[in-house]
Image 1: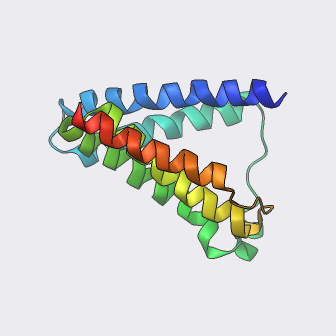
Image 2 (image 1 turned 90 degrees about the vertical axis):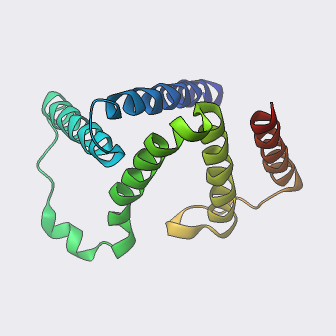
Length: 147
């Protein structure tokens, strides 16, 4: 099952490269990359509304959110920063460099989160193998930019 899930996530990663490229193209019809990000998130909002309708989810109980820690609301903000940044940087350094660098950043942050179990997640200690993989990815970014 782990291999299946990993394959699905690999395909989702494939979609991220397409998303960034499409959003960058969208921005060429607008006056600013932030407008492209706004349109992208608006379409995503409509898609999520439709999915919630299709799956017949309940209306969220907004009262339960009063007890949630402040940082759980940052996901949308972080997503907006990511999408906006991708739109801004793809024309300057290319899709490959943008995604490789963002994946390296994600892996560094993920290793710290896993190691310490931040955000209430289970701890998964950092290993030399994980560190080696991140270092190799960083070297890969260097090669991607150089060639």
